[in-house]
Length: 340
Image 1 (cartoon, rainbow, N blue to C red):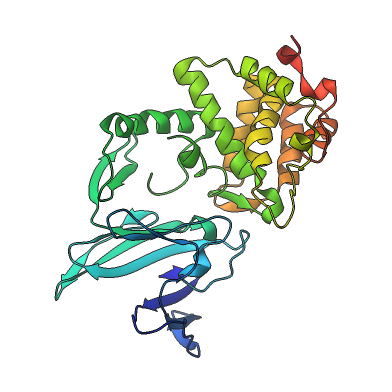
Image 2 (cartoon, rainbow, N blue to C red):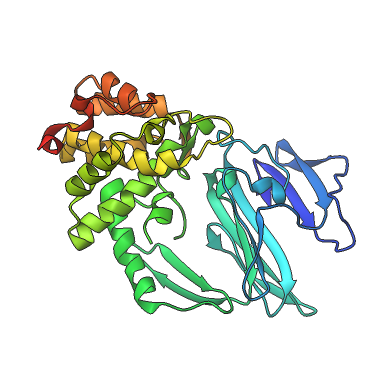
């Protein structure tokens, strides 16, 4: 497993209860040196989840990676991830990126997964179960892997939607940014994973965008009237001061992924779309995803790019929507066709 450019090997020892970190050893890698950290321990913490069939996975946001390997757990520090995990031969390991070669010996099977693009730490994951694995490819050759754990329900109609959803997302945001792939979670591959935060104040451009992408899919696939639903939501909360009290940018260090990012954040993006017009708005999303691909950016960076692509001053709009703790003034609350 390689994290933040540092090779590491996780040694599972069921008798150990706390991680043991040995003094780092310098390992020659060509003309450079790397540090190898050998450690062990029993899996602990809220990031580890028991699966229905007796397996486990490790996931969580904002912090989960530290539950299974040592690293600098900050969204600005991204790195490639290479996972090697050994389990009893009847079990399967799923990780990030593309699967590598497997090997088997003495009743144990080793799985390898490789994500060569820089990945943010909270997006790293591993799942172990007696999976039923379905593989396919998108039209452009991108591999799709669907893994079904024990005691779960296989939904072929949902699986069949994946190529259509991915085609919708690539048309909207540009080429798929990673090596391998419902709408909200795949949208994070562009917003939050490929383009990651500078720090935790920037959570909106992951959750706001992923939430709004689900609505865009509903609009494209089912003909949903997003203008009407927007007006209804705004009207229902017009007198609710608490609904508007958490700023979307920098919601607070104790709640970096507050629900406001999902709910009001998607409203803000729809209002921005109606302010800019569809052509410039969707051009902005592609521009953002391309400019910062595999990197980090901040919400103020997005505000500046939006103003550039819109060809207008959007400081009042973003001040009212992203930085305020009260309902936006009318010009920003119902721009363009939302005014009707």
